[in-house]
Each structure stands twice: as C-alpha cells, then as structure tokens.
Image (cartoon, rainbow over the protein chains, first blue to last red):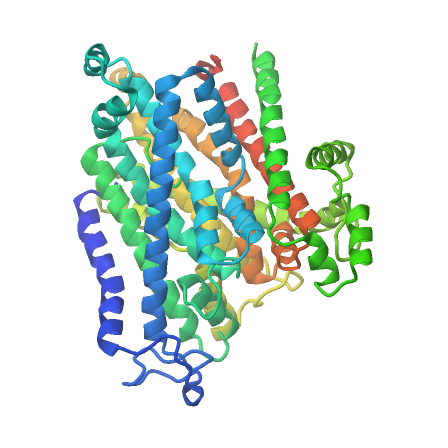
Length: 272
Length: 307
C-alpha cells in the first residue's frame, strides 16, 4: 500500500532493534545481575538506559527481551507454517472427508478471537516459554492451512500437475516439488504478517503474566513491570514499548512491501 | 429465499458452537495441575480431597463429565466459581455491562475515525494524503494496546492530570480505554474502507456511470459508496467479535471491571469454571458476530446469496 517507500521505512525501522542488540553486545552487562545500589538508576555511562526496580541494566534486558520476542516469533511462525501448510496441502489435495474434517478443526480455532484462545491455552498449559510457543502455534497454523488449501484447490487442475500425476509421481513429491513452489508467494506474505501478530501475541501474554516468567526478560514483562512503576520511573515503560512497536512496524512494512512486490491478494487478511 | 438462507447459516453455526464448547471443556481437563490442589492447597488431607473431587464430579469418567458439562450449558447452569461459590453466569452478567459500554464506545470511535480516513485516502490514492492516512493506519495496527494504554495514561493522567488513571467510576474514565481499544479497530477498518472504495471506483459499473455523465460527488458517494459499504459493514460485524478479544488486555491495563478483566482475574486465581464460562461467552459472541457478518453481506449483496 505504501509501495517502494515501505521497504526503505522497514529498513529504517529495523535499525533500532539492531542498534539495541549491538549496543547491548558492546555494553556487555548481564541483564540478570541484580545491583541494589542501582535501583531505578537514571541514564548514565554505566547504564545507558538506566536500571529497573532490582537494579538490573535496562539495555541488557531490552536486548534479551528483543531476542526472545524475535526467537519466539520465528519459531512459532516456522512450526505454524509447517503444520498449517501440511494440513492445507492435504485438505486441498485429498478433498472429501479429509478436507471437511481438517477445515472443521480450523473453523473451531477461528471461532475464538486469536488472542483469547492463546491466553486460555497458555494459562491452562502453565508458565514457560515452551508452553507459550505451543499456545501461539495452536492459534497460528490456521491462517497457513486455509491459505494453502485455497491455493491448492486453484492449482489442482493445472496441466503441469496433471502431467506429473500422469508420470506416476507420488503425492508427497507433487506437493513438495510442484504445489509448494507455486503457492510460496502468498504464504511468504502470510508469514510476515503472522510474525508481527505472533510478536505482539507473545508480548501480550507475557504482559498479562501468562507467558515468559521473571527473572527472564521479554518485552511484554518489561512493559508490565514498567507500568507498575510509571509514577516513579516513566522511562521503564517507554523503552520496551518503543522497541516492540518499531519492530512490529518493521515486520508489517516488510509484509506490505512483499505483498505489493509479489502482487499477492488476500494473504495476511486475517491479521490486517 | 433470504430467510431460508439465514436459517441455514444459523443451523450451520450450531456444530461450530458445539465444537467451541468441546474445545473449552478439553482445555479445562488437560490442565496440568489438579483443580483440587488449587482450591485446597497441596497440604490438604486425602479425605478432604476425595470429598471435593466427588463434589466437583472429577472422579467420574471423562465422557460422563463431558455430557454433564454440555447438559449444564444448555440448561443455563454454567457451574460455580471456585472462590465464592457464586454461579458463573451471574458473575459474568455483573461484568457484562461494563464491557458492553467500552466495546460500544470503541467501535463508535473506530467508525468515526476510519470512514473519513479511508475515504480521504481513496480519494487521493497514491498521493501524499493517501500515504499520510495509511501511515496512521500502519501505526495503529503496529502499536500494541498494552503499551498504548500505559503511554496514554502517562501523558494524560500522570503528566497532564486531565483524566483518571484507571477504574470506571470517575467522569471521563472511559476516554483512555476507548482510545486504546479503538485505535487498532480504526486502523483495520480504514484500510478496508480505502481498498473497498478504490475497488468500487475501478468497477465497470462506475465506469459506465461516469460515461453516462454522473457527477463526481454522486459517483463517489451514491454509487461507489454503496458498493464499498458491503465489505466495510461485513468487516465491522467481524470486529464486533474481535473487540472482545482486545478488551481482555485493555480492561486489564485500565482496571476496567468488565468481562476481560474477570477472565484474567479468574486465570490468576485458577478459578477454572469461571475461566471456562468467560471464554465460552466471548467465543460464542464471536461466532454470532461472524454469523451476523455473513447474514448482513447476504442481505446487502444478493450475489452472496448463493450457497
């Protein structure tokens, strides 16, 4: 929608998270080291972004949270895409009962507001990053499944698929060798919008105290801790939010740019 | 014809609702911890634990518990809160009005912002105005509401002192939660309005109307406006459901005593029947909102009446 400037803007936006990571690397302080003399310390050379309520270095924790958010995002989108594409390919290719069973399953997942289902699942599964990933994957695979199913349905009758069937190719071979490359473009767009949604989702769950648990840092837990100290030390809630916001915007911009560049319509609509 | 279609869609929603209820039931029963532990603590006497397990029917086979759960849902007995033994439904009913107020205000704000913004962007498609409007929309979708809320609080409540920080009972306390919840909705809706309007304007019908000498204002408002309204109204109905998902976080940020905050409180207290009830109600409403979106689209656009 924003065209070529979107790419430039995305690159500019990605600079901030990179800068945070680089600065933390050069700074070399442990984000878990408690220093009771530095509780809520302001900006200084020793602590470029100050310290939190336990005297831990905010810059180091910011880098840790950022790594975790990105890591969780990539893992969830990776697993979700793998599962979703497998389900979508199977549903679209086999049709009939397999299709209606798998798509009913997708319908049920889509009957919940995504964030609510993730909250409920994560709460039931208990604390921990692995549970958080499971909850987010349980919500995230559906977009990929529906999209790849729709794409397969439109490709199924294509002559090159017919030819491959006539040559005696196996189902998996056709799926991986012929179908997948032809539906990759919309899936890529879906993945980038999905990544933005998962990053916000992870931070949201952690903000609610359901996802990442202290003392580990996530951008969401940092916003939560910062909110409770807003009256004393307002910058504590500003930093993690700015980083999260800019990161999500960069990913959204990349999605926009990809959508325009690959001329894909419809993908990512559920996250729009 | 239309009535029959609507009836058909209503019937289709029934298996979905059953699926939702089943999933919520299964979620409760795959909880790693024992609800009895949550209630009595791990130090309780085995006899007490057994008595409670029996009272909560946790010793029955899973299928019997499932049947009982479904029968309870149908008869309006959604179980009791583990904390104060109140019926779940009456606890939910107490909180519902607050959520309805917040959701209504947010949706209103979203529409009032999104329609002019989307129209303005479409009218100046590809120009600077379009970029500005869509830039705002991008900011709106990218800003997490659990950060926007605290930022608004910091500015308007803490620094400027214009508005109350949280709660529901002071004048003006609805303003910040409304902005927090409405922003993302407005962003999505304005994108939708822009693209629908543009699509309508490039349709053959509009080209024909233009060729027949219909004036510009008439084209944009009367002709394209009506065509663009269909996807926008559908999107709006979808957001009617989505807004409840967002309310969970926004209500937590602002301590707004609605259904969303109740859900989070119930999760923190491990009050599983109440969690179940809240999630079911929100999901049920979401399904109905999606249904309403479908029916509205069929009503507005006869082409969508083919099953």
